[in-house]
Amino acid sequence: MSEIQRINEAVTPLVKKAQAGDQQALSEVLRRSYQQIHRWAISLTGDADDADDVTQNVLILLSRRIGQYRERSRFTTWLYRVTRNAAGDHFRRASRRERAAKRSTEEAGDASYQRGTQLDELHASDVADLVRTLFVELPDRQREVFDLVDLQDWSPVEVSQALNMKPVTVRAHLHRARRTMRKRILERHPELMEELSS
Amino acid sequence: MNCTEARDRLLEADLAEIQGEADTDLSLHLLGCAACRAVAERLSAEERSLAAALDAVRPRLGVEEALTRAEAESASRRGVLTLPLRKAWSLVPLAAAAAVAGILVTGNGGQLPGEPIDVAAVSETPVPTVVESTGQSVAVFETENPDIVVVWTF
View (cartoon, rainbow over the protein chains, first blue to last red):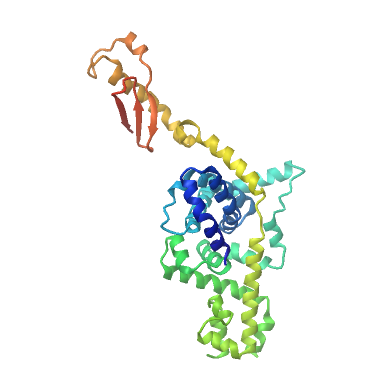
């Protein structure tokens, strides 16, 4: 069972209670969704600090707007849209340059600054090249679709609902993203291609 | 399907196909070709590593601390009329306009707009209270007179 399925199974009955005003149910919905929201935010922003900010905003939005969920789609599909919109708002509010300036100020001014974030650590890990390719080379839509379908096991149909996109367009983005990512993988393993070319 | 076709197909194939779990030409080819299967297994393994690495990135705040902050932030954002701050500010000129509207509706003793107003009476007229904001273009005000409600569009 995927993480998304687990969340939906656990949260769906709680959502109704939360919509009816049960604060404890609402807290539990937020608690169970927290890590997943952050996981989406990482992919949508490509930055651990931005992902933290977006996640926090989504918790606030969710606590205030859970009544707007109408069960037309799975709860996680709706929640993904909320997260996506929050990420869009986040980027509109502050330019990348402003955020970078703020960050460098914080780094310079705070001796205890320890934002050597896990995402930065990822950049230095074995999957660094793939992470860079994912966040730097892929256009936003391709990254989003690739992440949801291939890395998080969403069906292309569900992605088309979440992104309000035709399934055929989802497939097109997915194929382009896969081609970029997989070519990059194979470039790092030339031995795998030698046999074919010899 | 030959190896050249298979390797080009591998660049776009679904993971189920790559893992030989689908009933397709590519999956059949992979079952019989160790070299292409090695390519497929490498692609699959690297994508799994990427997924695991991204899943492992955790938020800076623990969930309980994040919930506490969200609750505090949510309460502070509720503020006046449960409107976001920028909308609350937009109500400043609105409230002034509403005061005039309230005067016209309740405080002028039935005078028509344009007729002289008794200044003393006006100065004692309370400002109506905003009881419901329905968005950026409509607000509802209660007046002292329970039979009169002002619907203000702006």
